[in-house]
Length: 516
Ligand code: FAD
Ligand code: MLT
Ligand code: ZN
Image (cartoon, rainbow, N blue to C red; front, side, top):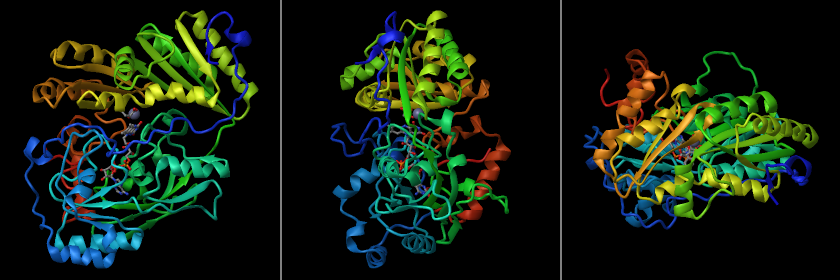
C-alpha cells in the first residue's frame, strides 16, 4: 500500500521492494484513435508564403523507389496523413512523399538528390514535437527515421551506447537494462519519441535537474548535411578538445542544420533504490521552500522535482479518469535515485520530517513500489494528453525565475475569455521550467492574441526564455527575438546559410521570417 504521511508514516509506512523497473509506459502515437477534426493547413492558418523550392515530380519518386525500395517510399494519401499532422493536432502539411531510409548512406543519397533538385525535406522522428517543427508546412518531403533502429554498446566505453536516430527512447532504455544502464533522459513521450528527435530538440524531461541535458550526455554524433555530406563526429571520448565541438550545432537545431543519423550517449548507472513522493502543498511560496529543503536534505539523490496545479490535475481527472490519492491546490512530485536504500531512506525521512515540521505540506504519499510509483507519475506524465482531449491546446514552455514563475498563470487566468476550458500550470520546477497551457474546444485566434505576444513580453522582462525545452519549431519562430538579440539571430542565420545554402532542410522552422 501507499504510505500516507502522518503520525504513523515514519514508523510503519515504508515499503520494502525498493528495486527499480521502468515507470510509466505511455505509448503516444499520432494515430491514437482520437477523433478530432483535422487541423486547418498550417500554410493557410498562418498565411505562410511557400519558399522557392521545386515541386515533387514522378521521376523523383522513381529515383527514391530505386534508391530505397517501394515499401519505403510512401505516396498513398491515407498512409501520409499521420506524417502530415503533429501530435497536438494543431499544424498540418501536405507532403506527398515519406521516405524511410535504414542507413546513413541512404540518408546521404536522399539529401544529395534533394539538394540538387531543390526539394525541401523535413526530418521526422516519433512526431511528438510540440512546436510544429516535425511536420511539413507545405509539400516538403518527410524523411522518417523510423527504420533506423539499430544500437550497440561502444567497444571503447561500456557506458556509452551508439544508437541510430530512430531508436524509440523507451525501447532503447529497456534494452540497456541488461547492462545495468539507463538513458539519462526521461519524458512522457518516451514510448514514441526517437533518440534522434530527442537530440535534435535537446529534449529535457523530468530528470534534467539530476542528469543535465543532452549537450552533456551526447558525446558524439553523426549527421547528414543538406548536400549529403556525412558529418562524422561520433566520438565516444569523455573529453575531446581537438577543435570546434561541432556536435553541439546539431543538438537542439530541430532538423534545420542536418539530419542526425547516429548518436553516442553516455549512459547513467541504473539506480538500485528509487522513491517517489507526491506532496500536497498549499501555496507557491511553500512549494519553493519544499524545493529548497529537498535540495538541502536529499542532495545528490534527488532525480526529479516536478509540480502541478489543481487545474492541471482536474483536467486529467475529467479527461482520463486519473486523479491523485491526495487533494491540494498545488502538488510537488519528487523522486530520488540512489544506490543504497538505507542511505536514501534516511535522507528521504529527514526531508519529509522537515517539510512536515515547517508546515510546508498538508498531506503526502510516498512509495518505492514500482506499480505505485508508476501510478503517481502517470498523473504528471499524462497531462499533455489530458489537455489535448479538450480540443485545441495553446502550449507554452518557458524558463522563468521563481519570483515570476507561477504569477503568470494567475495573470493569464484574468486575461483570458470565458470560452477557455482549462488554464493551468505544471512543469519541471527544479529546472525553472513552467508549462503554461490553455485549451479551447477549437482553435480560436482571439485566445491566441490574448496570450501571444503578452506571455513572451513577460518572459523577456523576467530575463527568461520563450522555450525551455520544446524548441522553437514553426510556432515560435517569429518570437525568437524575445529570447535572442539580433546579432545572435544573424549568426544563427549565417550558420544555416553555410550548412544549407539552398535552405532545403526543415524550412519555415526555428529562424524568423525576417531578420531584424
Ligand atoms: P519529432 O517530433 O519527430 O521532431 C522534433 C523536431 O526534431 C523536428 O523539428 C524534426 O524535424 C527534428 N528531428 C527529428 N528527428 C531528427 C533527426 N534525426 N535529425 C534531425 N532533426 C530531427 N519535450 C521535452 O523536452 N520535455 C518533455 O518533458 C516532453 N514531454 C513530452 C510529453 C508528451 C506527452 C509529448 C507528446 C511530447 C513531449 N515533449 C517533451 C516533446 C517531444 O517529445 C520532444 O521534443 C521529443 O524530443 C521529440 O522527439 P521526436 O522523435 O518525436 O521528434
Ligand atoms: C511535459 O513536461 O509534460 C512535457 O513537456 C509536455 C507538456 O509540456 O505538456
Ligand atoms: Zn516538459
